Length: 99
Image 1: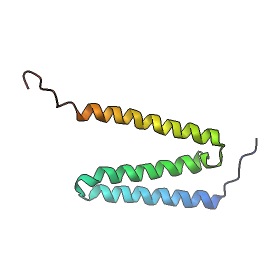
Image 2: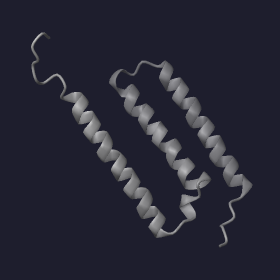
Image 3: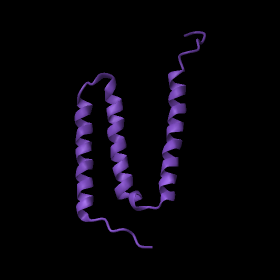
Image 4: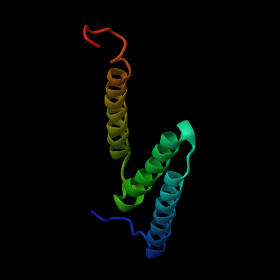
C-alpha cells in the first residue's frame, strides 16, 4: 500500500503553526480574559489536535471510512463530556442534610 508523500516543507509549516499556537496558548494563559480564558484555550487546543491528526497522523489522506471513524470518535467524546459536565453542573441542585 503506497502512502502519499508529504513534503518536508509541509511538515515544517505545520510544525511552525503548532509552535505559534503553543506560544499563543502561553500568552493567553498570562492574560485575564475573565470567562473567555477556558473557551479560547480549548479552541486553540482543538486547532492543535486537528493539525496533528490531519498531517502527522496522515488522516487527511485516508479513505472516507477513516474519516467516519474519526468523526464517530469525536462525537463519542462530546457525548462523554456532555454527560460529565451535566453531572458536575447539577451537583448543587439537590439539598443534602448537613450542608
